[in-house]
Image 1: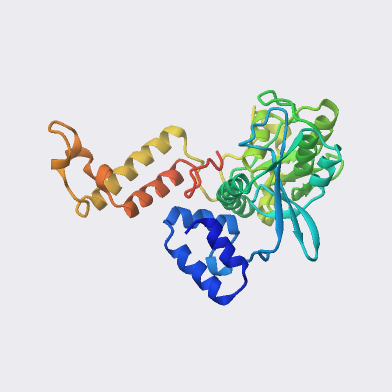
Image 2: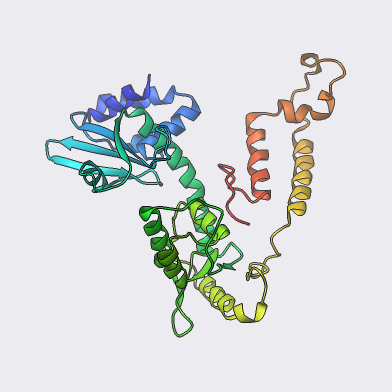
Length: 341
């Protein structure tokens, strides 16, 4: 049974219909189940809450000049029910929230063009957003608790990214001014997101020049999709203060901590590669006895004898290897996204 049928059953609000939806959901492949739960914004199908089927929903995309229809900058919808009309914007975290963007775009107050679309594209964008934001959420938790080496952003414009428009600039300024406060006084106002520490004077540079912040810092903002932890641990704030205080004395190209207190310095790329090789050897030894050996399925003279665990390991063993390999390489274990350096 397709997504549309399951969603329709859930929307009827009748107990027998929901039971039928649950049963249909159970027959979907695991990947389809995951994507549908992302679309419904819940962890279990039993927790899905949908507007009644009588709701009329119209979807729109808003495009910048360089956007492609398959990858719009914004996805919007208009939900019409008996109780009224609500316009919503799909956030980068996969959540629909009330917004006046659709009405403003219709009035011609915003740049770019507005196009009506089917529900297929919003459904895909939503599923991808939920999946990607899971990695961001896990990275933010590490930032909040102090799991990253802190580094001080330079007060110079970046050059590696294209110029941004007014909406981009306002999003950057919001990021720079909403992060947890480190200190304020004669030396200036500093903030941190638990990974970067910066002076709010960068805001003036962004406003005056129209340029984005330095390349690595701005790349970090993009990777986090401008999300911030609500707070950071007190010891992280204190570490950030010490880093700011050391700025005049270090004289280094990049002022940053050598390591997280109580932990060794972050591994170098070469150290990561060696650790990955050691993990692979450990994993092969662990699963060699339980992995089927099928040389008859491979041509004579191949190196199957050496790599049969890699080729025939169970899906569970493969997932075990991939998760740990990603952790070793500094990536999110679920998605493979880089989360820091």
